[in-house]
Length: 318
Image (cartoon, rainbow, N blue to C red; front, side):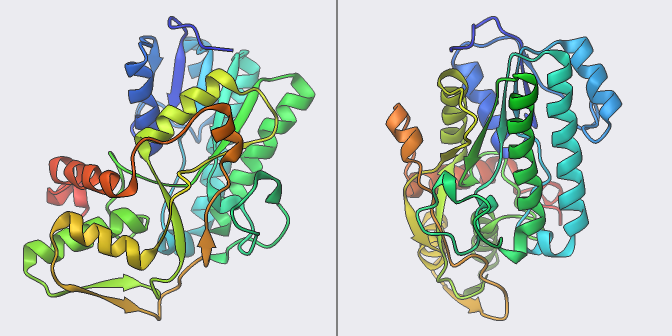
């Protein structure tokens, strides 16, 4: 089930948080025929352009890590974008891969596909057993459709298309724009700016009580290559760290990593989102994969990457 080292491999979204981690993992493993296209080079919302890309580049294996992503604010204010754009690009990539005869495809979803109040830890079987979290339902519905398209292409056309559901990711090439970022990169930026400006407090969204799980991006890259090489089932598979932390505890860890000595004030007028979200990754763990980067170390690495690449005003979007 392994991928030959000379295989042509396309990573859709290779410059993003998840895609760049997959790309680094493939390079480290010795794969040289890697294909990556920027948004300027290939518009994934254009089905004709995607079909032309497949015909020209002829990838044998495809990782679908491209997506329009964002936090609670972005999902709440731009629901049509999150639903339509994600549906379009994943449909084009997967339908095009089937028509081009791609040998195997891995589609990356998100833990937000699960019902808001599903039993914890979240098992794969909990999909579609209850209502979604309203603050990110648009993105979740698109990802659920992607899972189902993989299943449908398998059943109707015999495609070896599989899906994996990562938990909350962070790390190199994260998004630190406060209008669209997730909680951990948003905290890194907030604490960094508070420290550099001499502020005495940082404002966090909600109560700080929700429980979350985080996975360092390069651990996801490792998991994706492992899954692509070792997993061929229709059932999607969870990818998590099995390490749970409250948002308040996370804030303390970020503050310590950055050296911020002030306090955090919680704006309870802002939504918390799902009360608790930790994934049951036992199916993957039993296959022999485990994450290697603990949260405290991952935050340190993420902050180092932030300092190296993202502290200019142009990269921060200010």
